[in-house]
Image (cartoon, rainbow, N blue to C red; front, side):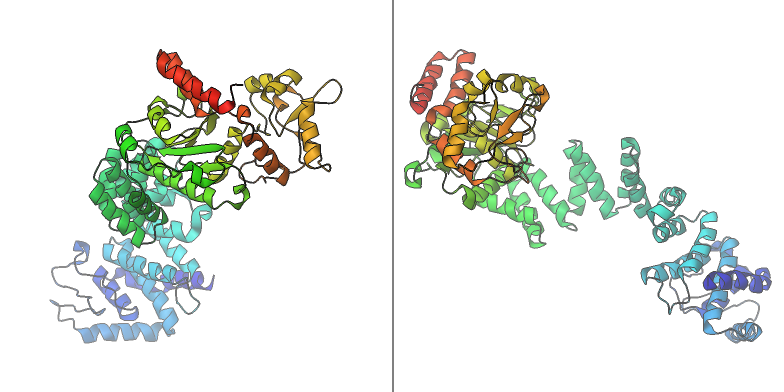
Amino acid sequence: MRGLFLAVFALLIVAGDSGRYVPQLIANASKVLAPASLVSDSDPTEKASSASVNTADGMAQVSGQHSTESSLDAQTSANTERFNYSDYHLKHDALALLWLAAKQGSENAQARLLGEFERAYNAGFIATDYIDETTAIYFLEKLVNLENADAAWLLYQILGEEGASQRFMRLAALGEVAEAQLAFAMSTDSPEKREKWLVRAASQNYVPAQAALADWYLLHGQQQLAKPLLAATATLDMQSAFKYARLLWDEGEFSEAKQHFSFAAKKGHLQAEKALEAINLYTPYSIQQALKQSPSFNWENEGKCLQRIQPFATSLATIMRAHSLYNSFNNDQRLQNLSICLAPPIWLKPDVLSCDPDYKNAGILGCSITPLASIAKKQKFSHAVVVAEQGKANVQNGVMYLDISDAYSVFVHELAHFAGFADEYPIGKGMANRLCDEDGISDFAPPNLIVDSEYWYAPNETVENWLEIDPATIIARAKTCTVLGKNSYKPSRRITFMEHHDSGVIPPLYLVLWQQQLEKQNAQRPISMNFFQAFHNSGNQKEAAHWLAEYEAFTGGI
């Protein structure tokens, strides 16, 4: 408050200076304040036919009326004697003089004032400075009343989002302050307004706004609008470089894409490093190329492979995700004793598989997988994982569908579905009607779930198996059948990975049950059943017969 009092007092004291013309006010202030390059003699409101002012060195030189530097020194000295202030007080007087000049229309005086407040703000309003936060706010509000956009933006920054009026941000945005335009864009929930202000800010070559606008276009699938913005910022920002490289790669500009991936990677962008790793390890194939060039995985050398799983990807983003899943599985000590073998992913060209996040209007991710049949004949895999760009994860007859946002924990959860495990979170009504009664659950026989029966639990064999593995097993309530108001139970009181994939645990009993399921080939649905159904429905009975025979061979004809 001391600073504010002095600021107001100084305005009253120097009111006598208001009769002087603008250059004189700025000159007097400049004698006290540090020189500033912002002050020049270019303001037409500060020129007079009888005088010219040069403040490049912070001093005033008046010509045409025989005014000399010494006379200005004498005037400043007189002012100093008149006010008899310390240097601290003199500088507050100087701010008041600049304000009087600014009020008379001097853009240079406004710029000089703004420069002093920006300096103090950037320094954190240190105690040794003559400008404190209160003083800055006092004068900035005055500048805002003159519709100074830069002052409005600085005032908004000082007061913070909660303390500042939205008017300050809007005034700064209207005044073409790019930072304010970006902030104003991000503060609105209106898509039209956000895009409008992002465009205005980006048009001023403000890099953060260009990057934000590019993100906006990418979010809305407008890659061609995003591309020139990313091109403009790719050499300045590693995130823009990475996104630009991905666009170039998708358009087949592989060499230039690698250059931008390398630039981003050298700047420390982890995803760019992973992109380069995937590009060096894998090659996108057509079906014919995959048959001829993709290496065959030696399942026999991998021990007891009761499930032979082959991942597929169809883009750079999805091969990066598939490679990450492959590495995570191989490093997951929890699953090392299970008879599951995972081959390195195969990268297919984008036109090989037709995938849809709402496959057959079911609200889940799915693909037409018949193109994979010829690869399956060669590679001899029993299950497949398809990583696509977007869609809800699920398992359908030996095929797991994931998108690029799915974590490794989702993969492990879906992997358990390959072995017949049931979800322990509330399932949908359709599936609950098939599973949540004594007859239905006996048909599915999930290893981790039972329901009430007339006399005890069903299936009775499942409960007996739990107790045989661990007599201390605690049968706890599960949430699976909640939608029907029925009880279901699991062999653990803990929240398991079948209820919450990201935070649930895999109890030791579940690992034993998992291995038991793997050893029951007839308890699984391999991809051969998926191929059989697809070819049968398309009328290709020859291929359908082949895959039905494969299915029966896998399950033992049961």
